[in-house]
Image 1 (cartoon, rainbow over the protein chains, first blue to last red):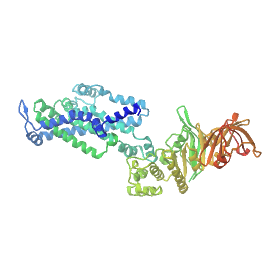
Image 2: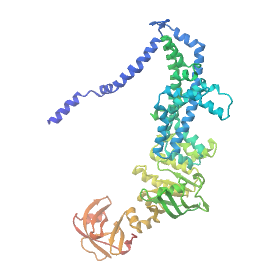
Image 3: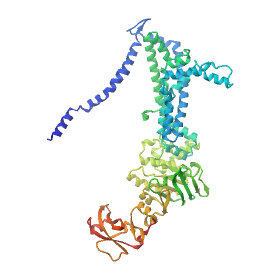
Image 4: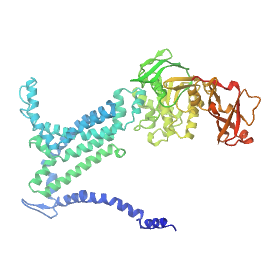
Length: 297
Length: 328
């Protein structure tokens, strides 16, 4: 037997069985997800059943955290408020995101121009969320740029009070922060639409609007859905935008959790977090029922 | 039914001329093939007829109507796209019913009409599937049904067979021809395959470098190419440099003998370079010296009666009427 063949044989005999090999291959991902996703969630779920007092929390098995949370009027009001923020943000992000993506994908003909314009869309992301939010304050404030421009243009006589520290400001900031999360997946889906489909629709006598409603929107649905998942989860979990832009006047689920943590009521915060997680998962589950996004991944 | 006429139709993309003032008359109810290599302007011509490309100059007439600037759906033409362009989110029947949906035809009526066309292309059993669940040949039938649902006077086909495997290609080719005969409408078919054009067309239009090189019945184009390009592109021809200029002779009209034969009008000595057995015929590659490289196609029985070896010297001859002068 040739020496090469011999060494090959030993290499083969050393190789693990296919079953073992697949376990080895998935183990890094399992480890990462286990340590950084499953373990923290399990911890939170565990702590949500613990008891606490003013300065300490300790192992126990009580249901008071949940029973208080689920029967409180405050919880309901907070969730309704958060849903309102989410719904408004989603509507504006979807409309703006679709329009921007449509423009980029179908009106801009050359690829270099598409890339340039797309990068311009990402410019706001070069600074942090907080800075982008704070920069709205001098713009929207009582004597800010928006009000003074409107007054000098003669549109209004007195400064608009609702521009800053209001629900309007919160939704505005959300749309500003998260719109790109809608643009990117929609743009991505649109770029994959075969251009001959649009010609085929035109050949069949479809008008521009009919092409939009009968061809482009149905084919863009998976992108819209992925963008919606981003926007919905980001808005549902947000606490800092609501605090800054509402001037502390509006509540959201995220803010409730952040307040409970500030008061060292970790078990209560954990229970709120678990309820929020379940709510968001249910919402994503409902969205996935409408559109099959697997093709996009 | 009316004839389609192109009157010095030109397409320019900036400085580049894709189609240069071509004029042609497509007889009504005929099967025409636009044949040429990629980039010759055949697809641009078809897309201008379809209305998917703006005509830079010239006119397109269908019967007595000038359709040059009409939108695609108002021309009486329908297009079948190269990759079929079926809507992936719609079922087969809804794909076929699409144009009627756009016209606002009520759902039941348009589905019934779509089913009629699916029956025509033998796809009625697949009406509820989506295009992804169909094979290439099935997708093509659906695309055909979708194009025909508008009752066009002219069906435009952009390389309809290029996405199919060779076996299916031959079968679909026969079906296209049969369908055209049954419907009695004009088909204009773009292809780069001369076999396809010869098999299908009543009228072949050979294009090269944005102009029509030659057009006519398949036998006419194949037997008597008028230019070197056509002779080479249509295949089956020897292009020879002679004292009288370039000449074309079909490879199967070339006689080959070990000694000179008295019957021949022209004769030439050549050296055998290669022998290729192709089943019913044998191709013999020959070095004709100053005349250039030649091919002689012999029936296999004739070749094996008197086989020749590589390197052997032979005499080639052909009848005077088989040789055609070529424009440079």
